[in-house]
Amino acid sequence: MKIKDFFEDIVSQNRERLASYFCEDARIYWHCTNEEFTLAEYIQANCDYPGKYRGEIERLEELPAGYVLVGKVQAVNEAVSCHVTSFITLRDDKVLRMDEYWADDGPAPLWRQRMKIGKPIK
Image 1: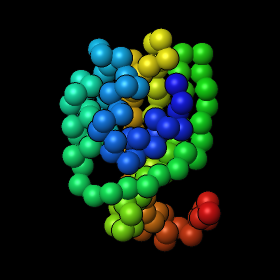
Image 2 (image 1 turned 90 degrees about the vertical axis):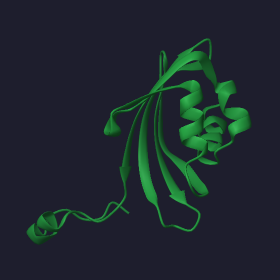
Image 3 (image 1 turned 45 degrees about the vertical axis):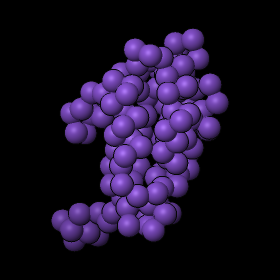
């Protein structure tokens, strides 16, 4: 699988190409919102999400059975910015299972800012 193309097609909401990356019986899990999707449901949720996006892979680790991918996804108008960590399990070079953890980007919480600890990563 061309993992960079896969990520780009997810971010650009390429409905026509997304199914080609997955096994027909794939399951996708969004743990932060306690949701499990079939392939058809995932494509609908991903491609019908409002707005246009761009993204970049910040870290990619290849595993014997797949990948761990960390990506940054931003709305083109920059109204939304988030990070995703995806654990991708492959079968025959297609996604069988994808476990994702999405988090909104933003400042540290006020209680931690008041402690004056930490510093920006970038």
